[in-house]
Length: 277
Figure 1 (cartoon, rainbow, N blue to C red):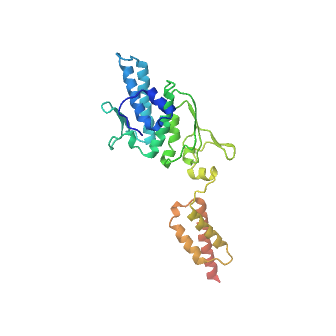
Figure 2 (tube, rainbow, N blue to C red):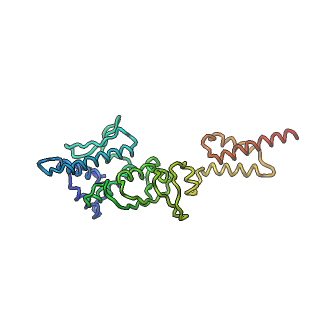
Figure 3 (cartoon, one colour):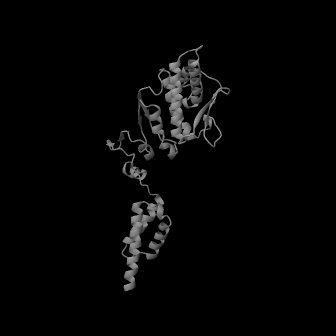
């Protein structure tokens, strides 16, 4: 993300994005600086004298800050404009103020999408929170940490309340992040109910058809099931598998626990039977 050293016109920055001369993400801070300059001109009685426009921009910055607080899950977050350096800083309690360029790759990816929309919208001279339309985003969860997959959709929806976002994803964290979205399974050509109250494991297995158990766990469970089904089972091998699985019992899913307890019961019955022989 490029550093901002001076205010450029917002329309010039937006035009650079549309023409493909620069990526929108790299222009985000420059855009904020330029927009803050427009606000100052609008507030000045001797320059633009446009109090209504100034109030709209002020409100937009307040909404941006509120959205960033949600995104970062930090109510202390503030975006601070340094007029001397002509740049913005992000300030959080118990942290040193930092530039947008210092954000992690995940946050930078989200702001790149946000910046692209904002700078493109600027050409229409409509406030970002007033623009209407449809935006398509393919693989919205790509390259994002799990914690950010939970946030990106709601962040964009709040920032652009009148835009309809149509996104594709393979992430249960995106699918369950909102409760007012229409979910459509393209593989089955069917609409899915609200999944916001479902566990991530249920969504992975039920919607995406992906097992939540690790390959190593599945292998041990399969071996356990096969061994207890043999006419002459290897009791020592079964006990070894049970011992290995017991070490991680608290992390097992319900199906794996069922097989584990069944194997334990099998051992008890087998030993009792052998004792009575």
